[in-house]
Length: 392
Ligand SMILES: Nc1nc2c(ncn2[C@@H]2O[C@H](COP(=O)(O)OP(=O)(O)OP(=O)(O)O)[C@@H](O)[C@H]2O)c(=O)[nH]1
Ligand SMILES: [Mg+2]
Image 1 (tube, rainbow, N blue to C red):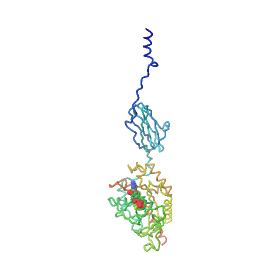
Image 2 (image 1 turned 45 degrees about the horizontal axis):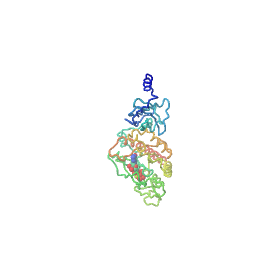
Image 3 (image 1 turned 60 degrees about the vertical axis):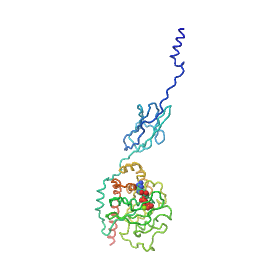
Image 4 (image 1 turned 120 degrees about the horizontal axis):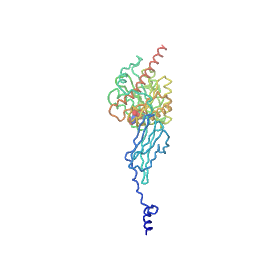
């Protein structure tokens, strides 16, 4: 009696002899708050964090879809109650990318991701105030008395943003949105501009020449020789380009004996940042040929890299971050390598394209680049007038 009572009691206390109790399943893991994108300056610490609905989870981190290899002193991961975090010490360019956290338990799993963008230290400074630059340009006097205006020629592939640059500069100087210089839809494959068209800028002595875009096919786009003819001053205003046959002396409008007033004083190569990688070698080659001819003629050259907002979201949101963007620097380096120009000749710019209101930052970026070409063109005139005097 006693022993069966003992066994009864003992049996109750011995779990090995009890039928197993069902283990309560943890609640299915969910995020209460998800990871947020982070932008950090090179050298600073950054933390990604989120909150889960339950602390009963295992946590794994991935970087660019690969398991994160935690480096001691660099990464610290942790869980405090329902909060999960990843801390990265002294962010460097290699830390940039997509980070994903996965929480898991026996009821399921959930993931969320965020981007870390590492801003490089500003490597070129821009004066983000437009008025001093506008007034300096309005008061600018051309060194050579014989020349009425500084003449700039824009060339580059179809849809690079050549006409848009003229629109942007005219908008800045004429004080209202300028859209008369027709621009193409980015989707068309053929050049929208077909003539050698002159555009004055407000009442300042600067003129732009817009030309047809360069294309791969010999029978399409402007012929490189026509751009070289324009540099030398042989091409009359409003000349309609013919893809296969560059202008020559037989054309009754050909300018036979061009003066400095007919010549181009600075060549601007226009490259779209978002298309540089896809640009056909043939178009690059045509641009190189034109640049080589300009060098022979002593004409200064710069590159305007357009559509910067299309390659960098940080710049798209805030154009003043341009020179802190790794992506922009990469595109400029690519541009420098493909065209064979030094980095200090490349100016990233953004054009008016969907904005309808004036934007001082956009204007300032363009004005910095514009000021540079004005001085380069004027130096060319000084050199040429000096040469002329030496010959006399
Ligand atoms: N997002 C963005 N779009 C731009 C920028 N610059 C130009 N675009 C757009 O790019 C497209 C082509 O620009 P255009 O100025 O017509 O280019 P183009 O070099 O004159 O082209 P063609 O005359 O056809 O050779 C247009 O849709 C512009 O609105 C820019 O800085 N950012
Ligand atoms: Mg055009």
